[in-house]
Length: 195
Image 1: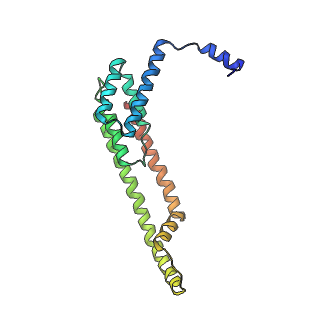
Image 2: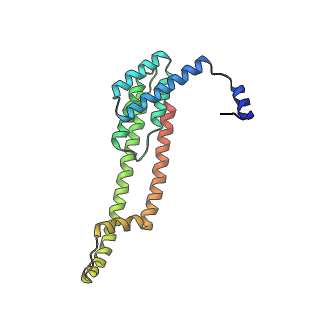
Image 3: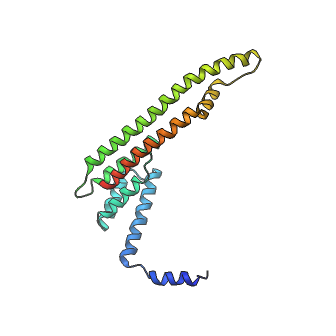
């Protein structure tokens, strides 16, 4: 493949990687591979910890921080509980490798995130149930008329579809997602500061 003169010029300015840069890239690639195996369930928490300990012993504490930052980057407000716990335990376990770890501060933030996740889900469910009660009453009257005319209606599917199409639900979800998302992002920023 022929490189353009501009690309050749940029490559010439960049130069070759130093041995330290090559080693840093190798460690980063090894870390990515280890985290990938952990996410796929091919590595357990203990194996991840041992692998990270080995990487740390080969370099320094910065690889532990890099791993934690990558793990924090995968946290989501609406993620599965098992996935959340997997990341939480890995971040906290890796914190024990640091000389001046902030384990208890990180744990407090994770507890706050867990509370937010629970409140987020409960508020969403409560709003859904309130709208459902009102819409079910409306649909019951319509359903009775339809039955008299010989039609069949799937009330449960109709209720769900009507709730999700309603302006009240869409307004609630929009505001709820925004407020919860801002709080979640604040907690994530705090985790990154502590790491």
